[in-house]
Length: 276
Image 1 (cartoon, rainbow, N blue to C red):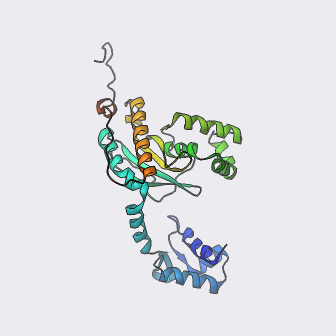
Image 2: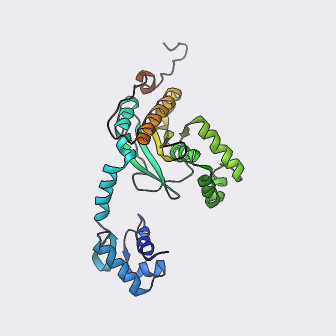
């Protein structure tokens, strides 16, 4: 590992359950000598990536906020997707979320809120479970075989515990089924009161850029026409994928599906009466 990589590994220590670190604790956690650890911390402070607070503690610095803003403005996936996500929200009333894989972590990178007030446990920047929910399974299913195999080798026990396959062949078969379908529906899988439908975003046949999801309450999802909702998410995912592949950031329009069936939950017929 290079000196730069070692220095940047300090940033990985900062998490929601431990947002502050002393220089001494950093040295102990990463097995740095005191002179080396102190030098790395000082360089990160000078770069604005760390900030000193009370009692010799450090937190992540303000430059990260600036970098996050630049990511939002420059990310080709977001530039292509946000206008379409807003259309999806308008048509369905669901929340619309884009997720992406970073290393072996799944992150939500943008969310457009719908009509319901949903209490989502995961938001931009907070890692999500890699094998639960619609977005991760839609993403995993679209990965090239070599990359999927690396993930399997790293998480074989967890994959088995999640019922996704007792061995590599079984896991690959399950992912192939999702890939062939082109979407995945999660009904209360990650959070019992929330459900989602997701489809992958592809810049080419082998390059997965993320997953597009519609999220709503499980109770509402049970009343919606999931066939039409699935067609809608796939159409928009394909449209965004084409824009990403073409390198287009200009707003574009996709012909909307008839919204009535998708937007409006199906009315349950009363006893003794037929629904109109």
